[in-house]
Length: 85
View 1 (cartoon, rainbow, N blue to C red):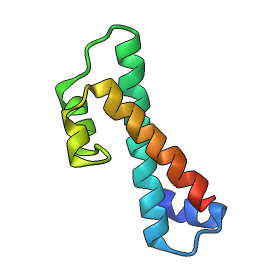
View 2 (spheres, rainbow, N blue to C red):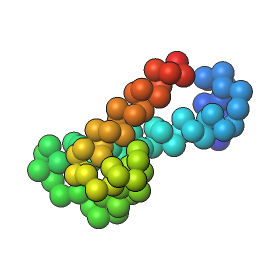
View 3 (cartoon, rainbow, N blue to C red):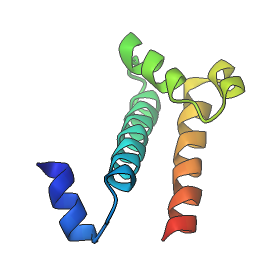
């Protein structure tokens, strides 16, 4: 339902594009949440940390700190949006 609404609102013609945008948004949200938790001195739940590492931009990035992985994900998303927008 939400994806369908996104297609109508954004004028997106491809379900693949909507899935890609949705996935990027979820990655970015997790990255922002992890950065916020780290800045507030809160522990990051293990499942969040594992998912963030699984979503690292490149395999080598998975070895970086959670903060650096999150920043790279956000940077990658910004660059990707700039290219498509």
